Image (cartoon, rainbow, N blue to C red):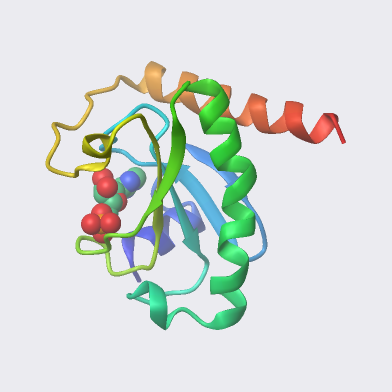
Length: 136
Ligand code: AMP
């Protein structure tokens, strides 16, 4: 079982942002920017382009309201989607607010956030998503 499957199962804690039947989103524990979020399919497949079409095609649509909420909470030029995948063999995308290309570099020092700061970021993003839903 991958560490991300354990997170989905609730065996390892995470700062959950959103969940559906097929996907799970949570804050990256070693963020390179505030709001750095991971989106994962609820299936164990290592490489992103080995993910079955049904999941792959829906992943962006699941990520969209999350990315919009991150952009509202952490003003930036845009929220970018990045795949790396070299560390955890469970396909995932990173959502990262950026202003310049360097903001996406994984060599940048990771932010050291307290539990309280993670919870605040989590709550901010969730609140923005709820605001967006209530506008419909
Ligand atoms: P990569 O596989 O190279 O895309 O990197 C995996 C990402 O998962 C890294 O940015 C890690 O900080 C993040 N990560 C690893 N373990 C956890 C965890 N338990 N909770 C949240 N994020 C994690």
